[in-house]
Image (cartoon, rainbow, N blue to C red):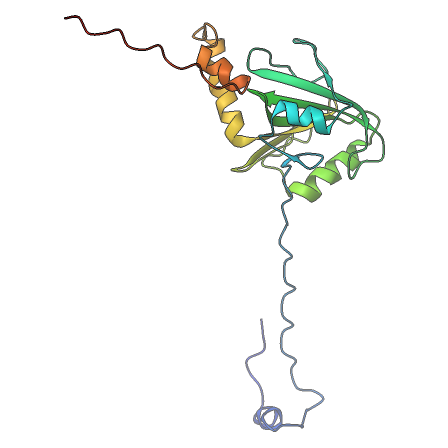
Length: 213
C-alpha cells in the first residue's frame, strides 16, 4: 500500500520545485500498459477473399486440382451438389517452415473455407502461429482448439494434423443445409439453387395462361 503518512518536512521539500529529499517516498510506478492482441483473422487464401467464385479462384491458382467427391484428405468432407473442393500440394504457408497441403472448400462455388494439412511441421510452431494470429483460443482443449468470431470460425485437429478456417456467413448457410441433409428433409437441389451454384441467370418464368373468357 502506498505510504500516506509523511513528515511535515517531507511535504515541504516535495512542494518546492527543484528540491528533492533523498529519503522522500517515491511515487508508485505506473503499471505497464497491456498490449492488446491484434487479431489477424483468416479472410481467404493467398490474397483471395471469402466469397470469390470457383472459376476466379482456379484462374488465380492454376496449380489447384479438383478433389473428387467423397475423397477424404483428413478433415471430414462434405459433398455435392453444393460443396466443391480444390487441392494445392507443396504450399508454403506464412509462419510454418515445412510445406503443407491446402484444401479449399466452396459453398455454392463461393470460396468458403481453407484447410491446411501441416504435415511435418512441429505442433508447437502451428500452435504459435494460431495464437499469434487469433489470440487465446475459446476453450482449453489443446488437441481441438477453436476460435469463433462474427466473421470467421477457425478450428484445428492436432491429432489428424490440420487446421482450418471458414467464412461465418457462408458456414451458417452450409450448416442449415447439412441439418436438412441429416434429417432427411433435403430431397434435391432446386433449379434456382443450381442456377446460384453455376452463377446462371434464372430462366424467365413462363407466361401466364390467358384468362378464360
